[in-house]
Amino acid sequence: MVAMGIEIRKILADCDLDGLIAAAVLKTVYPDAEVRFGHPAELRSGTHDDWIDRTTAICDLPFHPDCGLYLDHHATNRPSAEEQTRFEAAGGVCQWEDKPSAARVAYDLYLDDNDLSHLTPLMAMVDALDSGGITREQLFSDDPVLWLSKTISLTDIEYTHRLLGWLFRGREFSEIMAEPEVVERVAARKLESSEMRASLDDFGKVVDRLAIVRFDDTGKRTNGYLVTAHFGDECDACLIVHGWSDGTVGDHERPPLGASFYSNSFLHSGGKGVMDLSVMAMQFDATGGGHANACGCRVQALDENGILAQRDVSGGDVERNILGWLATWREHTK
Image (cartoon, rainbow, N blue to C red):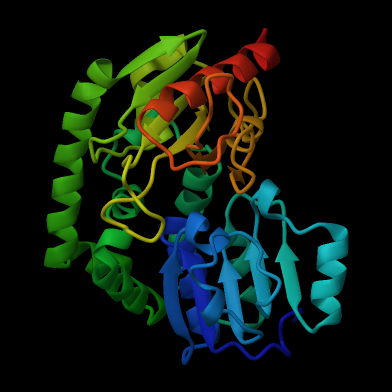
């Protein structure tokens, strides 16, 4: 096995379904490892630097040269050939693969030498959700894995760790879904989803086949599936602005202004859209990125000419960022 010789004492994973299942795989293999969940912006800003060393496995997050094991599938997170050579020469193991989810990378890596049958029933939906592979019918269905994914959050971290414990210990998935705290959260997410869809016309509009949803300074968040399903064939992709003008990286209750970009996978299947959306995600934010069809970044301070400004971000910067992204969108889709 490629990672057989690595000593893993710590696991750092993204706090979404993909990261959770990747962490569950690693925790199955390294049961004594401590797990921490984070966010890409936190890792890129150095929040976890003092926790990352050669005994740390990082999955579903940007590359960090000080870790010992790196597992991921995001195109913009892949280390360069030079970075990977230096990393591996220093004893690190890099397992970046073009697969539908980071969980799949981890699962396939360890499957031959470990019993991962407790996670097998979840893998198809994890792959589909993370790679734009679900249908409209699935989105509005009662699929338990899909609804579990909506309950995972950095603002509810103790619950997320309980899910991790149940998963890696091999508890039956039906039993997990019957837990009162899971049932309660799923019911709440279903209500929120219904209310969110009803509000999208108030917060969103379609411009040149790009659906733009402004949730900045509202506390609202949603995913690209719901937005593109709502606007339907009118849009090829969507842009969702979220976070707070006075937010800070690491504050999970009040994160900074950011944007997420998603291709309309209901129109453009197979992970391909009308353009590589990571071009917009990295247009102003050098630490932005993700997939070509699903990615994100932080809103940046721009002057009246759309040039990066050396000052704190304000609410007015959202419109300037959107204008810049729209110009790039039109250039790539005309």
